Image 1: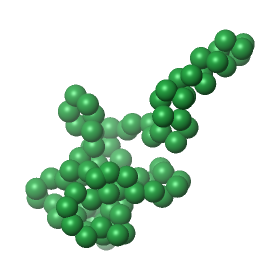
Image 2: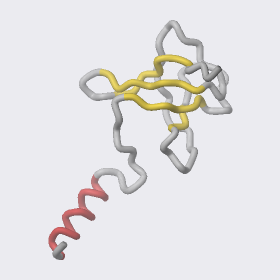
Image 3: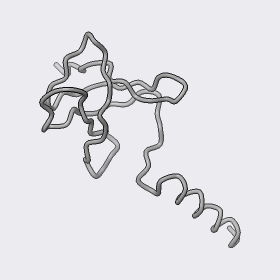
Image 4: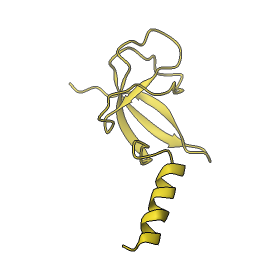
Length: 91
């Protein structure tokens, strides 16, 4: 990799939000923020090693969020925003 490629890569990284920016996936697993009480929940994504809650995220009317729920999110719409589809039952 030459110097120009290194500079281009760094500029892309800086403009794109840095190294911590998530690579969008069509469907992802996450956990509802342990401190959640009401409204749209913040989410801790499985692939986020910092375990920092982000959001809030909308959810389907058929699902009622609760703290620590394991949930499935799906990217929807032109902008590709995530929507919580519901709780994943592990039992």
